[in-house]
Image 1 (cartoon, rainbow, N blue to C red):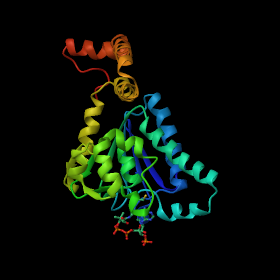
Image 2: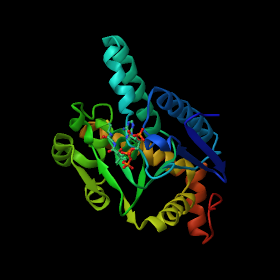
Image 3: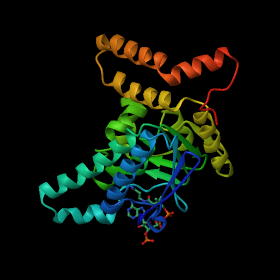
Image 4: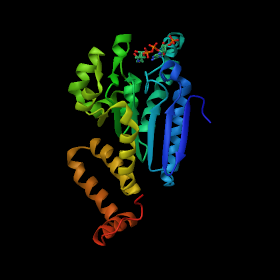
Length: 262
Ligand code: COA
C-alpha cells in the first residue's frame, strides 16, 4: 500500500496514479521512494509476464507539477552529501521507470511541469489532452532540469532543449508533440479512449518482443555506430528462434492470431 500512489492491476494492465492532487501531484522524497519501490515490483511482475502495459496518470486537475518546491527549499539545510543522496534517489527513480520492460503509457491532463515533464519523458508513449501545458520550468526557480535531462534529451533532442531548458517557458501539447515529448494530442474527453487504443495496440504485440524492442532502443542509442551491426543482428537472431518469435511468424503464415493476441 502506498501513501501517495494508487495502483490497480487488471488483465495485464497496471494503472498507476500519482495521488497528491492538493499539490498537483508534486513529488517529494516519499513519493520518490514509493515510485522507486513501485517500479521494482512492476519490473518483477512484467518479468513474470503478469503485466504487459502500464498507464501512468495523475489524480485531479493535473498530471504532475514536478518536484515539490516546499521539499526542495528545505534542502538548503541539508549537507552537500545529503543533497547528493536526495538527487541520486530521484535519478534512480527516473531510471527505474525508464527501464521497465513493458510499455509505459502516460496520460497527461492539465500540466506536466519540471519533473512532471520528466515523468512524461520516461513514458514510452504519451497521450495528452489538447489543453495540457508542458514546461521544463526549473530555471524560473533558479534551479535546472538536471536528473530528468538524459530522458528529456533522448525525447526532444538538443535543439528544443536549448530553447526550453534555458527559457523555462511553458508550451502547449501540440508543441510537445512536435518535439517528440508527446505522441498523441486529443480533446480532454477523449483521453481515456486514446490511451485504451494504445493499450490495445500493445496487447496485439508479442510481450517479449515489446520488452526486447524497448531494450534495443536504449542499447543502440548507447552504442558506437560500428558496434551496432553485431548488437542488432544478435537481437533479431535471438527473437527469430525464440518460442514467441516462432509463434508470431507461424501465426502470420497460418493466417491466425498469435497466442498472445488479446
Ligand atoms: N511543489 C509544491 N507545491 C506545488 C507545486 C510544486 N511543484 N505546484 C503546485 N503546488 C501547490 C501550490 O503551492 C498550491 O498549494 P496551496 O493550495 O497550499 O496554495 C496547490 O499546489 C495548487 O496550486 P495552484 O497554483 O493554486 O493551482 P493551479 O491549478 O492554479 O496551478 C500549476 C497549478 C501546477 C500550473 C501551478 O501550481 C504551478 O505552476 N506550479 C509550479 C510548477 C513548477 O514550476 N514545477 C517545477 C518544479 S522544479
